[in-house]
Length: 167
Image (cartoon, rainbow, N blue to C red):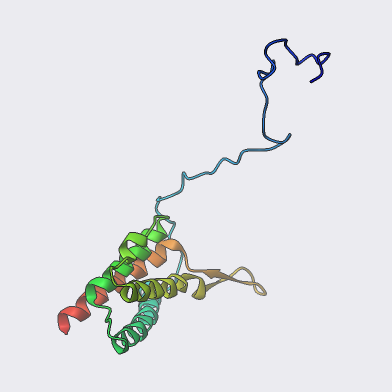
């Protein structure tokens, strides 16, 4: 230990005179902005909103039918309640929440089937593109807005509830 060091105090070798910062110089601490979390999403201008919504719901129902058929083949059917829980989990996820509680099940096969359908449906908003004509030569392709996705999820839940009443 260097006794000529200005930081050295006799009898206080373990206590520094000046406070130390353990961060490297010029380190910025990120400030995350959660102010928009949970706020309503803006509506996307869609010419035929009802027609597009119906087209997307038919697409989602086709995925649901495929997953239900697979689940029946392995002896763990996805019933109405499971499907509605998956749709609610998608809605919660669209607000930035954690949907995992709705996807859990004591049977690991049922939990896997719920998670698989959830993941496939979750990818759909990025697979559906809308076009915006910017000028004569330029068309912009945009993924589905969150507000419209939530509308489609509402319609999907209604159709699932209706189909289970009819059967």
